[in-house]
Image 1 (spheres, rainbow, N blue to C red):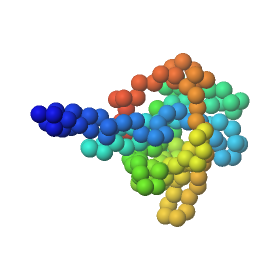
Image 2: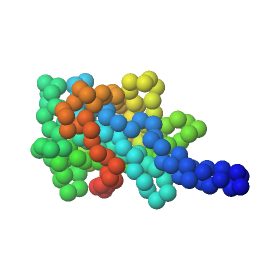
Image 3: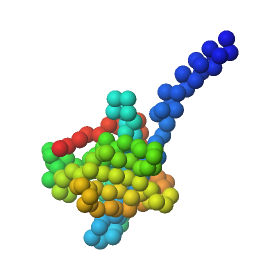
Image 4: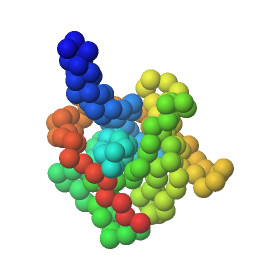
Length: 174
């Protein structure tokens, strides 16, 4: 009896353990490669793809040249004119299909899009320090790595402090 009860308890908890929060979900500040100024805020979120939990990233805010947030999900204006369908930049999914690799402690096998050019690259995401992520877009062995800074939601506009992302799934624009 005790053995059956323990088995039933384990079987009811295991599915929850497989959908635990993955590493690196949350808000990140991207930096412009040319000006070294803040460019956008990206929310990395998890979603189910069949039986797999994967990571995606959506632009949730853009910065002005002076370093202040100028656009959020409630007031997007800039257009990603080189992306299929010319969507707004804010609300655009730029990362999708990232799979966590336990052995390497990084996400791999996904895609990243440059919203300025609309080009899509293979991607790898890893962490070297607790306050930043390394995000690499690549074609074969060639690519470019950016450092994205971890953001504290409390420093952002109120609408970004408690985003409800549980229903988000990436909209892939190829």
